Amino acid sequence: MGYSLGFDGGGSKTDCVLLDAKGSVMGEGRGGPANPLRSGYDAAISSLRDAAAAAVSAAGIRSSDISAVCAGLAGAGRERVASQMLALLSQEFPHAATHVAADYEIALEAAVGSGPGIVLIAGTGSVAYGRNAAGKTARAGGHGPWIGDEGSSFDIGRRAVSAIARTRDMDAPVTVLSEIIPKVLNCPDWDELMVRIMKDPDDVFPRLFPAVATAADSEDSAAKEIMFTSAIGLGNLAMIVIRELGMKSQQFPLVKCGGVFGRSQMLDTLLDSVLASGALRAKIARLEGSPAIGAARMAARLSKAPSQAPSHGD
Image 1 (cartoon, rainbow, N blue to C red):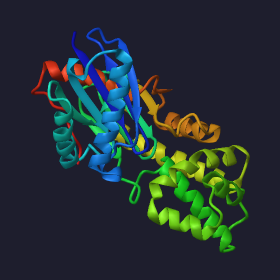
Image 2 (image 1 turned 60 degrees about the vertical axis):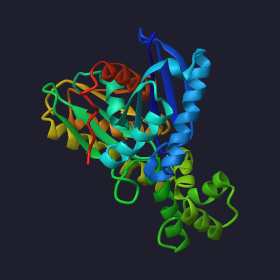
Image 3 (image 1 turned 60 degrees about the horizontal axis):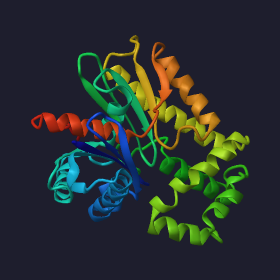
Image 4 (image 1 turned 180 degrees about the vertical axis):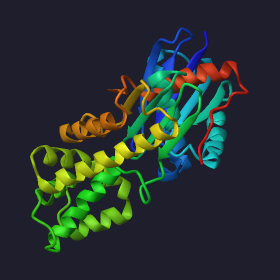
């Protein structure tokens, strides 16, 4: 039998799914961060290796039984990143046809297969990606934490710490975030927090999102402002893609994917309102299952047509 292995590697974790020739899930695994631009190439391939080992063990097969592999990775929309990760992935699975795609490509595959639709991803980072009925694709966002990623867990955590800073400087009302965040991070004082941020912001900002979500749903004004801004930012990403693809008046699936969704009632409600106002006929839903399933399906399809490699963004 031909087994297909798919990865969904992001800034905080990696999910892996193993499918048999009939498309049934045979095994699953999880690893650490796998965005090469943020965790490094060695750490990324190590996370893929760990996730694959767990999936292969769960299925009771050998890695040499795998015939096709596709890794959908945050950061792999850049051709240089995709090429380097493909070389490493090929070494890990020398007996399989290997492919590397962007995380948004496998999410769209998992959401709508080869049909038209749009995915809005918000996890450690954020991006919108879609395809219309004519096969044209478009992307917005995915530019990284320092110039984009609006509405991501990183962005929300960064804004929360900024709100605390304004409170400390007496430039904003008192926020409950000043009490919650030090407890979440087990951080004794402000100076220690600054040191930890400078040392590893990826280990600080994304972890704060659940606390901000709780504070917003408890009517904290600073947290509510952050969620409102995040909903508008995420909605704008989707609207850019919708306009680019000429889908505003069309009926299509608009699928939300990532750890930010389903954690804050305020954010989810605001975002759905923004999306519905800009695309009246869109069918808004959350992705059922892991995007790694889309990667495994893509692996199986591409292994039968090697010349059709996944496309990559800028």
